[in-house]
Image (cartoon, rainbow, N blue to C red; front, side):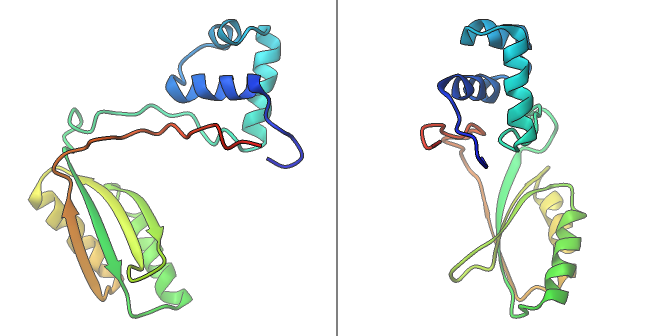
Length: 157
C-alpha cells in the first residue's frame, strides 16, 4: 500500500470482510469499535488503494453442477508475444477456467478449472488446445483438504 500503513483497525475490518463480505458497515463498525462513518471511510480507502480488490459471493461448485476440479499443466515450445496473446485469448474465452498462472521451472503454465465430468473436461481440452500447445497434462482433484480465499494478515507492514 503506497504511503499508508494499515492499522490494527484496518486489519480487523479486512479480517471480517474476508470472512463475510455481506456484513453491513454498521455490523463491522460495531465489531471493530468505531463509528459507522469512520468504518465506511476506512473501507472506501482500502478499496481506493487496491487493498480490497473486489467483493464476491463464493458458490458451492457441486450445487452448480461443476463438481470436478482439474489442474492442467501446460508446456509450450513457443515463447513469443504472439503465441502468449493467442494463449491468453483462448483461456479468457473458457468460462470453466478459474485461474491461469505463468510459472517458473519446467512448467510454463498452471491452470485451475472446474468441469461437470470427464466429457466436460474433454470439451475444455478441445478448446484449450486451439492455443497450439506443446504438452498438456492434467490431474483431477480427488479430495479437497483445505480451501480458502482468506489471506493471512500478519504480514502487513
